[in-house]
Length: 209
Image (tube, rainbow, N blue to C red):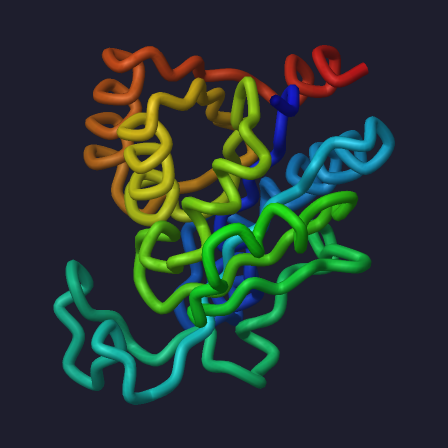
């Protein structure tokens, strides 16, 4: 079993930069906090898993008439700058895991000795990537420290997935931003009820040190 792993949710240009296609309000302001987390994880040798949207115009989530619940305007399109991770959280040598499932038993061998792993996805929920569950089983972390955007969409989907799988989760409030304040409050209250610890960047860095 690994100790702590850092789980970075969708810190991509289209969500994190004010000029992005689907900017999460306030995201730009927390980018320095995110950078501190990533740097601390690197210094401590902690595994950094990052999810990223990897969209094409034909994806079910992409719509020219979005309802902003199940469908959204084109964003994080493969090959565009908007799909790239921001510099603050960019990985140096990531192992990308696409939606093509690996045969049973392959993922543990692939990730052995790797510190940076990139999970591509086409849906809010990172567990729609068939390699996410084998990755989590292979890493078998004692706890997962989650940050990123958006709190009430993709962070929520990831955390619910971890909880369903019996994982211990810490959520870094000052390295995340959401789309809707009421939804964020509802999400964080539901997480707390299920044992998620809400924490800060300083507290995480102290624990890694």
